[in-house]
Length: 146
Image 1 (tube, rainbow, N blue to C red):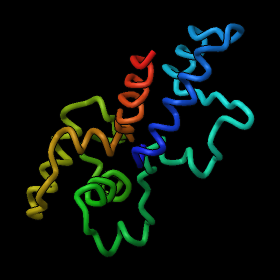
Image 2: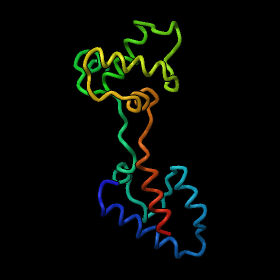
Image 3: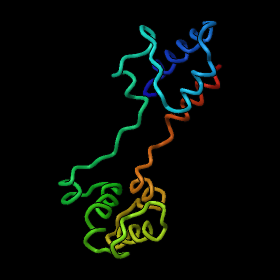
C-alpha cells in the first residue's frame, strides 16, 4: 500500500467488520488469499484509492524498445520481441521463460553489449511477466491482524 494511512484505514475497516456476526470471516480471508476484491458499500475505498494495491504493469512502447533502450528490462524485452525472431537461436521454437538455456542466451546478449543489471531472475521475470508478490505480503499482514 502506498501510505500508512491507507493501510491503517483498511485495518480499521476489517476490524469493524470482524464484529459483525453475520459476516463469515473465513470467506473474507479466502477472498483475500485469491486476490479478489471485496466491496462493501460505504466502507470500501474508491477504485482510484485501491489502484495502489496492484503493482504497475510493465509495458514499453515498441518505438522505445527499438531505438532508445535505457533500462535492463527494456533490453530484455528487445531481445524477446525483436532479436528472438531475427536470430532464431533455437530454431523455430518460441521463447519459454522456464527454459534456462533460453534465458542464458538472453543474458549473454546483454553481456555482449555491456548492459549492467541483467541477471537470471530479472530475465525470467520480464520474459514470464512475473508480478511482484508485494500485494500478497500485505494481504498476509491483514490476515494476521485477525
